[in-house]
Amino acid sequence: MKNKILLVSALVLAMGMDAAQAVEKSPNAKTVEVVVNANGFPFSFVDDNNNITGYDGDLLKVLDQRLTDYTFHFNAVSRDAMIVGLSTGAYTLAADHFYLTKERAEKYDHSGEPTGISDLRLIVRNDENDIHNLGDLASGKKKLVPIHTSDARYTVIENYNKKHPGQQINLQPNGEQSAADIFKAVASGEYDAAIYPIGALLALNKALNLNLKASDSVGLFPNVYLYKKNTDPQLIKAIDAQLVALKKDGTLADLSRKWYAEDVYALPGASDVKVNTDWE
Image (cartoon, rainbow, N blue to C red; front, top):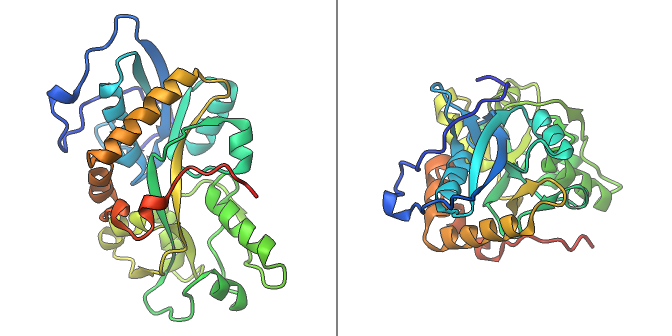
C-alpha cells in the first residue's frame, strides 16, 4: 500500500447493490474530492489491485452511486495528509472512522448523521486478567499503546483523565500506526493494552494469530465524515439523507458484518447513537 494519492474509479459495491439502485448522474453533477486513509484496514485501505475498499471505502462507493447531483473523485493518502488536505481545501470530504470532537467541529464541517458506529474496547493479551475497564488501566498503572493526537481515541482517554485527576491513565502521543502494528505491540508485551474498535481486532486477530482478547465495550461512538469548512450545505444534507436510508435498508449493517465481523447496529444501545454536539 502506498501513501501517495491513488485515483480510482467508483465501483458498485459487490456485496449486494445492483444496478437498479444506481441513479443517473445529472449532466451538471459537481465533482467532490473525497479522501480516505490508504492504510486504515478495515475502515479504509488500498488493496493489492490499487482499489480503495474497507467499510468507509465501500460506503462511499455506494453513496456515489446514489447521488444524482454529485460525483466522487477518490483519493487515498496517509492520515496526516488527509487532515492537511482537508484543512487547505484540497479535499472536500474525508472518511477515516472519525469521531467528532469539539475541536474538529470548530475546524471542519461534519455529517449530521452517523456514517457508522464504533464499538470501542480495550485490547489485551489472552493471559491478561487484570484489565477490564479504563479504571483498571489507571489503578494498575498499565502501559497503554500511544495514540496519535489527531485520533479521537486520544480524546477519549484525555477526557477520562480530566474526570479522574487522582488516578490517571498514562497517555502518550504517537505518530501514525496501523491497527496491526498497534495490536502487535500489545501481543509482544511491549504494552499492556490498546484502546481500539473491536471490529479491527475481529478482522485481524485470527489472520495474525495474535492471541488477543477484548474487554467489554468502553462505549459506542458515532463515526462521521469531516468536510472542509464552508462546504456546500446541500452536499452534506444529500449525503445525510442517504445515510439515513442506508441504515434503514440494512446496507450499513451489511457493511459492518462484512468488515468488522459483527453487526454494530444490533448492539445494545446502538439505536441511541447520534451525532452529538453538546460538549458540556
